[in-house]
Image (cartoon, rainbow, N blue to C red; front, side, top):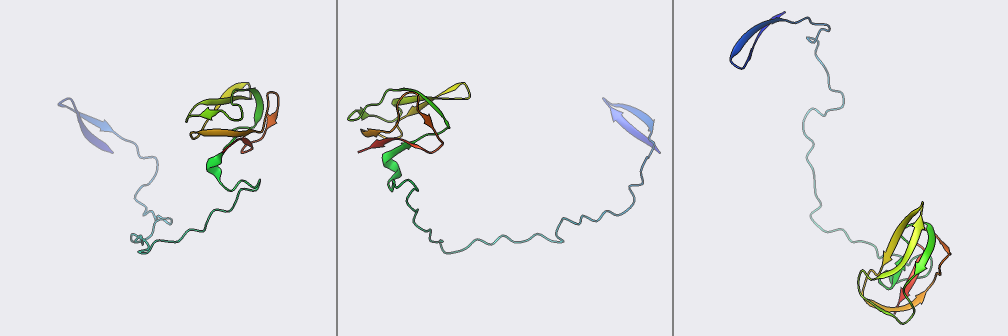
Length: 130
């Protein structure tokens, strides 16, 4: 097949060899014949209340959980200490990387459940707040 193309205002004639016959009709078996309308419920759906955590802590705003499985390198938070959001509470090591665990909310530390050298699991409660 011979085609004419233009590049930068210069006309060229090129020969193109067709390797496959594209004239066959293709049937898109995965496409619907017409668009499917999206329906959105007009009334809000009620959500079920969150169940208490398996370890018995009902108020998640009063606890800080471990973001990774690892080992506690050092603990800087002490019971009775007043913390502000993002204050450093402890440092965990996981896969030779250090992870700073910071206070999620402002509050007074009630209990620190771990000490340096302890192994922790993901979602384990590290610190409880009053």
